[in-house]
Length: 186
Ligand SMILES: CC(C)(COP(=O)(O)OP(=O)(O)OC[C@H]1O[C@@H](n2cnc3c(N)ncnc32)[C@H](O)[C@@H]1OP(=O)(O)O)[C@@H](O)C(=O)NCCC(=O)NCCS
Image: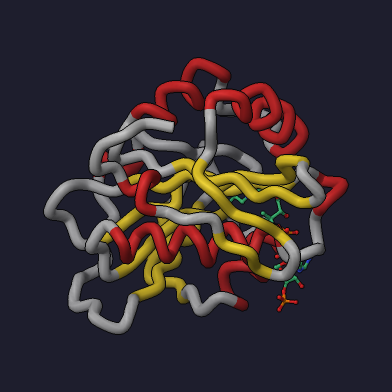
C-alpha cells in the first residue's frame, strides 16, 4: 500500500455485516477487472486505470472482502479544498449481490470522504438502475437534479447527494463532471 497522506491510507479495515472493507491493493486489480466486466457492459475501468487509482491520493479505492475473497469495490473522487466527494463507481460481483456488500462499501466510501474533509457525497445513477437506486436511497441519498443525455442520447442520469452532519456545500454538477464515468449500467 502507498505511504503518504492519501485518503486510502487513512481508511482502516471496517467489518460491516460480515463483509470487510479495506483499501485496495495491487494484488486485487485482476479481481477488480473481473467484477467490472461482470457488472458493466461498457465504459469499463480497465486494469491500468485501477492500478493508477491505487497510486492516486485523491482516488480512494476500496474493496469488500467476504470469506477472504474480494467481492466488490467502490471508487471515490475527492479534490483538495473541495467539500464534496463524488462516488465514481461501485460494483459487487453478481454472485454476492443482496448480501450487504454494496451497503458496506457505500458506508466506507462515505467515511473515507469524511476523513478527507468532505461534507457531502454525490453520484450519478440511471433512473432504470433499480438496485443501485435502492441502495443509495436506503443510505439516505436524495435526488438533487437530473442530467439529460448523461449516458447517451435519451439516457439521463439522476444526481443524488448525501450531506454529512457538518455539510454546508451546494449541489455541484459541472461540465467537468460530465467527462467522468457515464456507464450505461450505472
Ligand atoms: C448496486 C449494487 C452495488 C448493490 O450491491 P449489493 O451488494 O447487492 O447491495 P446490498 O446487498 O447492500 O443492498 C442494498 C440495498 O439495495 C436493495 N437492493 C439490492 N439489490 C436490489 C435489487 N435488485 N432490486 C431492488 N433493491 C435491491 C437491498 O434491498 C438493500 O436495501 P436494504 O438494505 O434496505 O434491504 C449491485 O447491484 C451492483 O454491483 N450492480 C451493478 C453495478 C452498478 O449498477 N453499480 C452502480 C452504478 S450507479
